[in-house]
Amino acid sequence: NQNLKDYKKAEEYYKLALENNPGDTEVYISLAVLQYYRLNDAKAAETTLLTGLARTQNNEEIMIRLIRFYNTIGDKDKEKNTAKLLLQLHPDNEAYQREWGGL
Image (cartoon, rainbow, N blue to C red; front, side, top):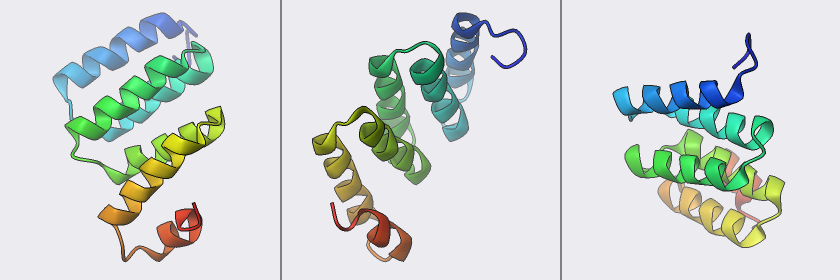
């Protein structure tokens, strides 16, 4: 990804890494970033993040990335619904309440 700039090959290796370790949150996030920013594939990035959420039982790092992704692409309904879920799962987190409580 970074040295050779072969983004399609990098995508293959990220997916292979996820097959070997489906609970690695950082790989889901890195793959989604690659898909969105380097391969210009918003649908694949969303699918990767949603798959990551499902496989990690709603990991909050992936969920935050998904909220920000929806904000970036302008999908306010999905942003709001995902933020609502994050707030339900972490009702005592003041930082989350400050950032997304107003949605």
